[in-house]
Image (cartoon, rainbow, N blue to C red):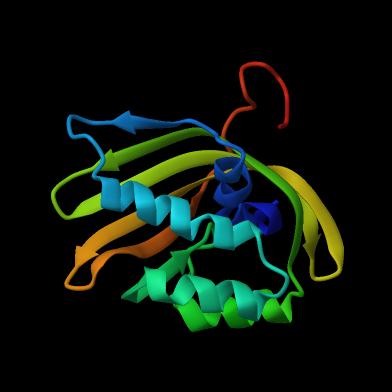
Length: 163
């Protein structure tokens, strides 16, 4: 269970590449730069042939203090996440996101989403649903991803379809 929830971090790319609607939440409209970061960052989470290549493309888009937080309560930095995924021989075969909502304030933004994934981790197949948040911050270098946070399992989509 935790294995595929941990992997839901990788879901937004497939869905956004297929044009999943991102709703705007809160009272402030998303800035074009935030939308551009979301659309630039998320494809590199699914469109990768190797973990090293994936993270080479993502690194310029993350804040220096980036971290990943998973259900077991552990936080790991960018390099630690790369090492973990490499050690686990992570592979994502298929994934979808739904209920994507983008909230933005002056110097922070959060994309929340629910997801379904199917893949391989530590040599074992997995399939399941999860929820996550992509946290972004305005820096001197522009908007950057500050954190990927994995949450509890959401209920199934209203239409009952996995994807």
